[in-house]
Length: 248
Image 1 (cartoon, rainbow, N blue to C red):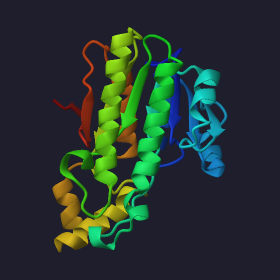
Image 2 (tube, one colour):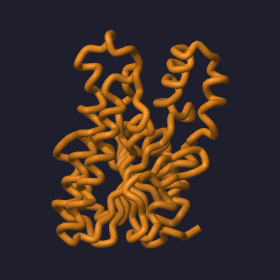
Image 3 (cartoon, rainbow, N blue to C red):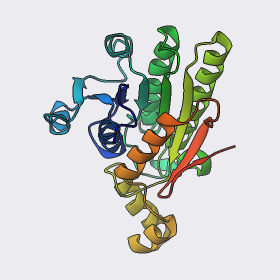
């Protein structure tokens, strides 16, 4: 499958979960993939001979990281997937430090990388896909500032798109909001916690969630969105187990 042959994709947060599925899907679609994450051991598992994936061990929230990596690799597709696991506890049990974890990681990563994509800028025709969360639509009462942080990622992806359009850069920016899933290390504890909060079994809670968003589902969706005509791509998509659905 060579849908993305001749294109380079840089995936930030590629070592595990949905990010890993996205990096692998880009590679299977023929793209030259650069996988960025802090965990070098997990990246080594991803980078196999003939995979078309190379690794960059780096902290994506470090202000000194985004610019040199974008300059070095000049990606046609930039996927921002990295983020922190939120502490799962009710509001009154949070401190400001635990409440703001995702603001100081997820939002900071989004801000830094989107800013550099505009300032560099990326080449005309480039696609930027920003992982937000379905929590940005419905809230996440056990996750502190997580839902607000993810909503802000959706906002700043839109802001970046507006600036790219005003400057005639020819870069498209799209936010992707995956529903809660127990198919990742990030989502699994949340499913357990919300099932307990609702007073139902984990099986009952999973049943009402619908088809799960797996790493394979996310990977397929990101490949599809990387290929959509920029003139018709939506600013944001809800990602369910059945694939991406455009949001108004």
